[in-house]
Image (tube, rainbow, N blue to C red; front, side, top):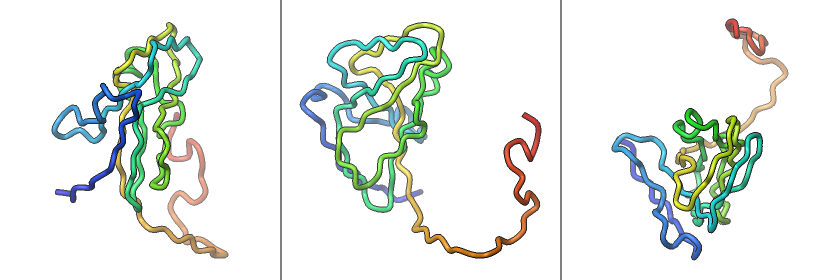
Length: 151
């Protein structure tokens, strides 16, 4: 079993009544995060909005948080995270906000306390890029989009 990682979370005044992000099942990978809107937001088709969550985090060095869509919102309503996955760096201390877009055919109402996205905590390796004149060969070579099969 992986080690437990503690992440410090500060709830902001406008989210005092909302839950912290939480796993909705024992083996869930992502924690649901909630809309900390004061008033209902109507997200019209093809429009996007930055939705506050009312929390700040101190993510440990060597980790990132990823904001991902909730599959139910995407499937039922066409509402998803525009910059998916959104990355929250370890040195960011501002309020976490979720950029939602409505790709569905009807307006969607975002209410206070609604589960709007998932938060995934991910460990990052230390990476060092090494400049070379030639890369080792591979079976794919430099084949791009659609190279390994049909669309």
